[in-house]
Image (cartoon, rainbow, N blue to C red; front, side):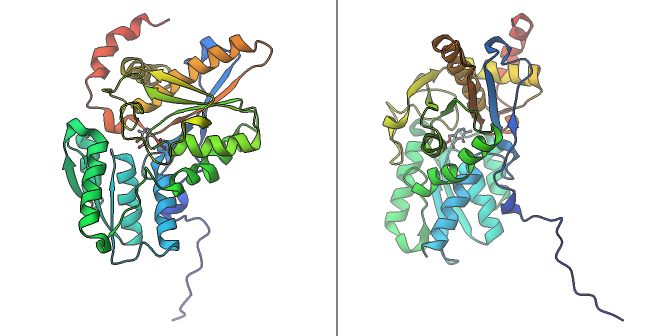
Length: 324
Ligand SMILES: Cc1ncc(COP(=O)(O)O)c(C=O)c1O
């Protein structure tokens, strides 16, 4: 019998190659009121872990390996409100590492189930302390046994924002053929805002970069931080934003429902907040510079899959009939 050597299959891709290069979405109805301004959003749920955080997690893990800090005997540990954890857990499973994650007890059940499905060990922390409490918890564990862990510390790791400097920003530049005039996104670790802003400003210093935050310390914009009252990430530099906008949880939830009904897009609450911010930015830009049609880009960080059990879907549905 003739034995035929397997040929490399040009049609297959490895899981980690699927991170990045997400589509740039345009809108049918939701952006109509700001026309001729255009709004686009990066569809980050196309990443294999389902969120924008795949990019940062991969960059931090590869950076740890390159610097010899992450070896096969180490457990990856970090604090995460969910999406970075899912990304770590997915990448770690693929690369053969153990993962331990601290997250507030009130993180959605879907997130916890997903993390456990990938084989991650969970430490559930005080919900009242949010992700800040989870961060403090992880620091304590690492301090007690530093040799056992690789602690990427997404809030203080330059590989986080560099992931977006190297990938997200370049994709936005290429996908808009250099026409982007404004970039706006919400701040969590701030990695996506910092990285994209730094690169876009290098490519064209006239691009306006606007950061978005929840309008109150207690909010429902999972993944985002109210910087004034939160533990401020070390990688965050507030001076690079041209402007800041605030969005309420209610407006973000309303937009999430609206995007589902008007566009067929099931996105997460921070994406809804980003869309509200993008519309505000487009409106203002049109007024300030009537001769030039703004091209506003934002990020849809994840899909609605992890938020479908939230009550706002029913509460807001009745308002849907009265939208302009
Ligand atoms: C759903 C969601 N939106 C937005 C963000 C914020 O992204 P970044 O950490 O890059 O600021 C995160 C971060 O975890 C997130 O999970």
